Length: 587
Image (cartoon, rainbow, N blue to C red; front, side, top):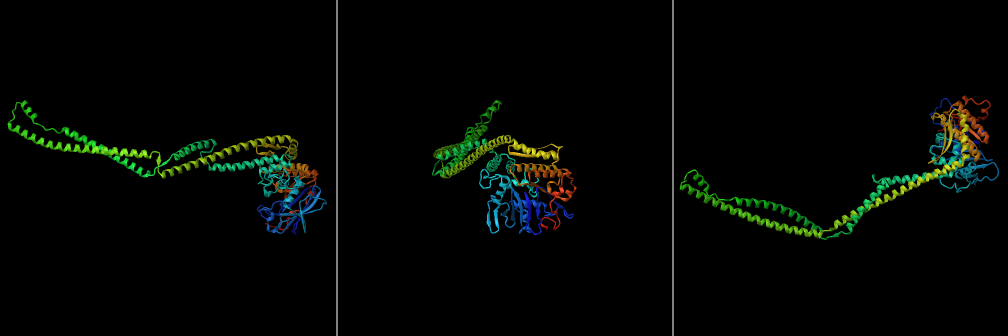
């Protein structure tokens, strides 16, 4: 329980708390609005101070980073399991707390002494608080609480003093917005009396799955866009192995010819010359054909055809005409003889050239064939270097593909293992929930009793489900999710958790709700929930602490036998310059 809160700040308004319901009222000044960045009346700061005194981290956006509070310290009087004590924490020296026990006897706090008295580190202080409130081991390193993600005081206390600035009113199962699913599952499993180590194994499986996903993404980034499966990678490796083996064989059987370049040049020149001679031979052959045809056509006409033509006509040609024919014939014979001599000369020359061409071509062909036989299966040093480089490239490509295949096979195998682990964990979770019917039912009925009082005309339930992602804790009330009902789901959850933990573990002995929880809620539900919280506090011997604005409080209609006025704390805070909790305004 909280007995009182105070500060070294002279203008700070100390608060005293009693058993049962405690209502801290704050009156808003007409000049203030929702956009005012000042600390206002300070009623929400009460929750911040409670967290500060109970080992909360001072983050960069913390109230205690304000320059106006840099030299301040805060104290709180508490009572846990019959032990009364005062704890004080300085803003300037926030890594430790000073504790004064007013109840005699051994208290078990791992503390040290200096001239000012007893002090403890924040870690030691949180361990002691966790032991006193929730039954955690008093000493560090105690199994099974000595592993990562194990529940701690700070991972569970937040459910009993939600903070709006942390997003604590977003959903029932999380008391701050950034709380992970795993932390929530582990904390709630512990608080509700389920097997929290099973929830821890789900979180370890999620960690393993996240690491696996990171490796998978890295592997995928290195892969060809077409080689995205093990089967395709196996096919690619087979092709690459074959190509590398062929290249390896080529390099192994490669012979170097010292004069390779010179011989290759000679063979290439011979090929060009052979092609040139072949073309020239075709030209000569064509010329020979024309010459031979011309020789056959060179004949001298004797004039007899003309004599026979006139004789057939009965005409006898004179002797002078006949003599003329003889002279013409003799002339033609002379011309044709000269032409035949010329054609014969050309024929002989072309026949000689053809023979020369054929001889040269035969020699060149023989030499080229000899060179090619000499170079067969051999190459130059540069060819060997190029072939070796190609082998290196193919072997590197093969090694890369084999590495990708190995990784892909491992990833595929790991995915199967993770899936198998998830299935086994799900089966174990179902079995565990079945074996813990009493704990599950106690939580369900605790939510139901308050839900029934708030919304008897609506369906609602508290569910603890076995899901592939771990235990799911879910409060549901039919209706509009815009605000009021959603906030009352949080109240139902907190009510049930406070009741269960108080009975099982002792708990902090108090449940705190800021006015922000009730802002969107209908007046009737506000009254009902506060009266239910008051009765629960009385039944557990603890406290239900509520912060309300006076304008809301004054319009509420309470049950006839419910003495709300006796529950109001003093003083009533205001958001004027000196009427707030701190006695001054600051940003």
